[in-house]
Length: 348
Image (cartoon, rainbow, N blue to C red; front, side, top):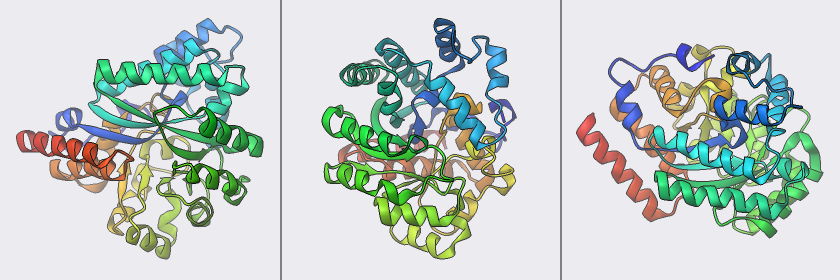
């Protein structure tokens, strides 16, 4: 699905969504590379299989299934080969976020992939931090990092990611995650690494229940101490789990267009976001890998508005959900919530 074919928000709300101050909690670093940046990197690294032509990229980013998505994603990861690539990518992501009035974002980064490809840990951290500081100064967008384990790379990647987080972790690091495929990658094996990260003060935000059933979400909660769940699409299959998530205020990072693009959900009409909201779960709306899925956060808010039948006030509540579920400090949460309320008072 492309952004142009995604369902529009109810009439009159597009401009409201575009101007609404927002936070985003589930968005990937490499997965946020715009076609322009991907094409530039592909041209720079001519040995890559990734097309350098923008039209060819659109076809390249059409996924057969989740496994094919991972294959394509990793081919783009391979384009990030030196600190200059890392800095460029990170800074341009922030620029794109600022254009959408995203005030704060927790960007999921997989440092193992870059370090394994030969970028020194210190240089990688310096590159993302330099971009973070510049983005806040120049765009007003605050970036924070989630370092995630690429599950498909096994326990070696878990060990390396944990060491990078605890020994080289940059100032903006706030959380620890687990991404990649779920099938064949059981969550309990990662418990020791999450235990170490949590003991060091990092928040636990693993992906779970995107392409597997509710048991993966239960495992993320019990084994990994999850404070938020990435996707959690299958939670609606277990009423007890929904009750638990609602009662304990465990947020779900919902990414509707992503779920359709990876075939995790057949159609938008079948997306479980309404069942999640109806069960009282704290739902946040996110873009995941926006250029790869032909979307952005504004489009995801439009999709959610249609699926949930929201007016301006309801859309603003989604924005406040993200603030509540974020790892901002209390003062920053109050400030951004007040900014959202002020915007609504003038524009709703």
